[in-house]
Length: 304
Length: 153
Image (cartoon, rainbow over the protein chains, first blue to last red):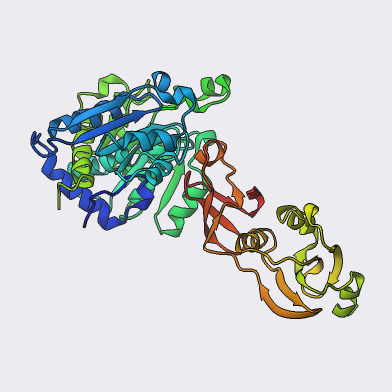
């Protein structure tokens, strides 16, 4: 499978075999390799602020011996002067071997990929896609459970606007997974997503109370209710804090349930769960580094 | 009423194109997307004509005009059962049904305000995921739209 020069834009572009290949390659990147991408330059274009993803890509490139250039906010860049995405990318590809990009506009990364001869890695385009997050989520599940097949995965929180859960559900539909969606009525998984999953024969169950399904889960993927997705602050007030998981959950779950979270969290997981064997969200963030190293090495043609 | 009688309602053209079997309420939309208001030759529009197949239908006759592929694609989106007749010397030289292509480029506006195509200079491209009723998916923001949400550019 050849990933050299390939753009990483959307989990929807990946076949099951390609997902498994990336996860297999990632296993080789648990440790730094300071020579692999020596003399390579990664540009990180963050038109929208991000801490985790940007630091993770920067660390990934540096652990492979490469250099990083770019901007963390568009306020100082030519973007403010009204330059199009197309032009910005055309300019940056002259300086870099690969480009990581986050932008609030949906489809921005695909547009960038059409402008650029160099590979584009989508670090989030609005509420659309964040494929490296999905791949690190899958890598985490695979690492913790030894398989992606036959698991019962619960997703909790904002399932309406949360792109991570949409992408993860899509990716898991390649495997024989049972999905449990736990959300208040107003933040339920969109109809279209449910229809697509149904077409693929994935059993799905929707509930509002976690306790109804807690016992069945192998993985519980918790997401934040995202304030920035609500147009009306009063609406947000209504739903923030609707789920607050704490130690009382532990009486109702399988012994080997693993709790994941893309971070940052607000109050949906109490810190008292952090040092239980169930909490794997910080390890999950660490896996982001590993998967991003693998992806950089793949698209820059250093893994064959 | 026999179909031939419909044809008599608007005069025949010597050279040009007749678009038949347009949904009655879409005749003006078709006229709009073809910019027919600017057409300088004979142009006839008729609608609410009885049709055996469709109940009612519209017909547009455009003298001295051949449709481009893009124009035919546009028509297919709003009038999926339309037939295009090429007229030469008052006779139907060629007759074909419009067909929804696998991909619709430039014709549709993405209904997602956050889509990059709505604020950057880039043409829209939609993949047709279902033909009947029409459902399309934006190449960029990956959002699906069904017939009721589709807005032409």
